[in-house]
Image (cartoon, rainbow, N blue to C red):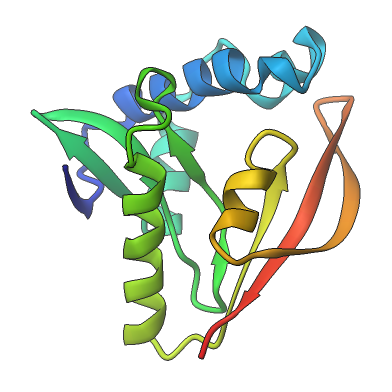
Length: 154
């Protein structure tokens, strides 16, 4: 596994990873309507390319296949953090989290935060994050429960 910056032209592969992961992995905690609102079938190349670039996204690659992706914003916020649904439990999330911690250290970020799904909550807790509050967010007319989580860094 190797983690590197996202490259222009990888948008569709990352979208598929995002969409399939939400619909396969998060299906145990959210309804079909919620999943469709969160990760709709339609793909807008322009918007998704802009989003990935704005986030400063990075990808986890194994044998030229993107198996995870994430980001770290200037104030320590993790906006996207997804592991391919077929690679769950194989260390992809841990590798991405180590990378995030390394970036945070380089940028002298003292706190990490994220809005974490029900499904990912246990993983983030295992990595030292604590729930600051549960919340309900509305996406395309659907209410989804998630958790505001934070981790203080030394």
